[in-house]
Image 1: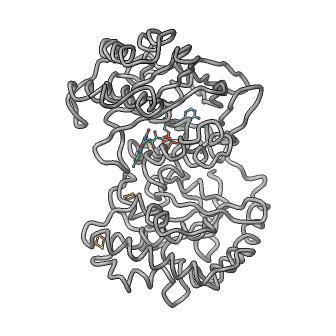
Image 2: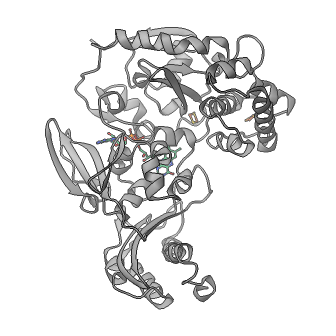
Length: 474
Ligand SMILES: Cc1cc2nc3c(=O)[nH]c(=O)nc-3n(C[C@H](O)[C@H](O)[C@H](O)COP(=O)(O)OP(=O)(O)OC[C@H]3O[C@@H](n4cnc5c(N)ncnc54)[C@H](O)[C@@H]3O)c2cc1C
Ligand code: FES
Ligand code: FES
């Protein structure tokens, strides 16, 4: 028998025996008749299906946005789902009114998704800026109104809420008083606590054909197939998402999301600019869902996280039942979408040695459009320097081979060389012998080779502006 899922959707408590791999979007629209959540692309690209997921953490509920078309309903067990229907109690909320006042909606198809994303921004932050508010909608696309009026609506909402809310000591209460959300939000923490207590013995223990983490790859590729199989939801089954520092290593639970990396104080301390660079990964809802484990297993040659962890010479800890083994990420990929993973084996953790003082790291990504796009090519570099001698260098490249590529020969060549234009130029020539790009929708093979060479130059220009002159390279 399937387990009963229990959660709160807007004000209402929901209990259901549906397949846990059904998409939340289908459940909301077909089972609850909440058709304000729209079906657009079903691929995480348009944001029309955006909803908020609230999870009890201590005494408070933390909310984040997700694309409900890629989110398994089983993962809302014990949580609060907020759709556009749950954002007002009769009158318009501050955000909805700002959309009306700025003429930010024409056909209205995209509008619920924008409203939910923007409301999510004001719920999950305490300091507001119009620019950040606009960025919170980076996963939403409007095809008819034009984005300028929507950005004005975000600015207007920011100004109204910043002046309405001066005291955040009880954040949710201030948001209710400020006209952002309805009053039932204040009861959600105590209601979720009761649901959680009732669920203690009901955790899923199913045998699986599909392991699902964030679902952002699987639901795009196989959403119908998932419904005919047993699944195991990794985020509800004890796979860790913690990011910790231990014995000189940074250890990341495979279930950590891109947002977890961006928000981690440990990651910001080690790589101060990585958080900003990771904002080039998908959109906010995708970053909230996409896990490191899923990125590595999906084995896409252009996967961004994998590219970064390759340059950091990371190690995977794999787990099957109670047995563990370790493997360097650089040895994990055997061919196109072929990986060294046994049946039923999971990535449990990924770790890398914390870089030495005075070392350097950079990540570069070029895609056809800046945001919400996968890379045409990407590259990461880790480099240690002693005066002007490169003592250690690791370079990775994506989009130029059947696998996420560690540039072994280029890295070996650079280690021990003087940091100057001639070493970099020679290294870029060696790189071209290590890659085998193909022509596809993201560009011709020749274009990708040139792009990668430019990305290698970009690493050095960005990291060593005093030593490597852009004019010398041009
Ligand atoms: C709109 C959109 C934009 C995107 N943008 C980017 C981007 O900019 N850069 C990028 O790199 N990717 C991007 N992606 C791809 C995707 O988001 C990432 O690859 C993501 O990290 C996958 O993680 P997930 O948790 O969603 O994986 P899932 O879809 O849950 O799983 C993917 C695969 O990994 C397996 N799996 C998951 N976790 C584990 C584990 N711990 N152990 C063993 N197997 C596991 C699953 O069984 C499945 O086979 C995008 C996807 C979409 C839909
Ligand atoms: S329907 Fe387009 S992102 Fe979900
Ligand atoms: S208002 Fe029509 S798609 Fe945005």
